[in-house]
Amino acid sequence: MIDSLYGITGSVTDNRAELPFDLSRPIEDALQSLYKRHSTASDLVPEELFSSIAKTLNSAVSDDLERSYPQLADMIRSNNNVFAAFKVHDQCRRMAELLVDDEGKLRTFEQWRQMAEPIANHHNKVWLRTEYDTALKRANQAKEWMQFEDEMDVLPNLRWVPSTAAKPGADHMAFWNTVLPVRHPFWNEHRPGDRWGCQCSLESTDEPATEVPEGGAKDRPAPGLDNNPAKDGKLFGDSHPYLPKDCHSCPFYAGEESNTPANRTKDCANCSYLRKVTITDKQIQKARREYEEFGKEWRRDMFDESTGGYLVTHSERIGKSKKSKNEVEKFNKEHAMCINLAKAGYKVKLLKDGGPLGDCDITVDGILADLKKTGSSGQIEKYAGDTFKKKGGKIVVFEIESRKAIIANVINGIKLLKGQKIIYYYSDTPAQMHVVDKK
Image (cartoon, rainbow, N blue to C red; front, side):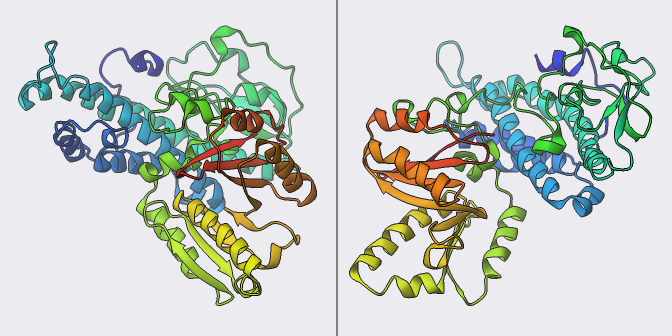
């Protein structure tokens, strides 16, 4: 399937980029690890192989992109880590399925190795070369798109520059030399780089706009390339075959079907289940520096070394919490909820005396949020409405004491605006965070 998607019919062609790192040792270590017959999703992502593939893809983020658009560079790296985790899981699952023969007996290591090595080599040499080549191109295209938007008051239009390939495919020819405004809806549907191996490009121009070309079924973006990396930070989109269609089909997701909303948003880069697999040492070190740089008006309460999440509490909030028994109880409840969020990888600040707007309790990853603990399905919608409409918060965090399915149905029915999010978990399983939002 991937061979066909990537246009690979035989050996890797010479125009694909050479891999920057040798994966021979990580592949060998992965084979040794898998033979121990581990069975959980995380066990099927050997650390060194994952790190090597993530490092390969992240090397596509140029120093120029890092300097010019550091936030986009961070998003791309986070999403590359997610892609690498699913890529490694996909190949290791396939190899692990070969550990036993048709009679259910464990094969010898050498027998299994002969069957598993072709899978590992194809994933990490043949396919990875195409993925790395594509990552280089799309990371550069993401930087260019940001520049197009920055300069569109001077150069308002974009021109589709024809392919430089010796034998260009016919699928994009209908779009060659099209000139349209930077923010024309056409560019949401078609762009250079939305086909594997595409060598077309865009350039900014003040030339007059042309008519909008009509594309057919053959001109649709390829799976995994139907997004704009400058807008979502994903060099490979959610439609790529490695990635699950939704949370319930994700091998890392540990939610409970009966108590999870059907519209739980797939947000892999911020998923607490994936974070422990995909978080890099560099990201943890960066979060650690942020945590340690908080001034003396903040108390540093905890830092999670496995997820990079942390909690800091403002000194005024600590002082207020000691004034009465009710305040002590309220603070302890809120503080415990914040600890759970931090362990899941969120960066949490427990704000002074209700926060900057006077009502919201915390910020989660820099976004104003409110904390609520309830066992009543009737209160959930009310609390969410209060946070979003009255308090100006964008996130409401629920700790839910009951596991009645109706609670998930209530959350499922709340109509969220763009940017609003619900994070919730059950009191007896605080590590299993559920997220519902609208992109």
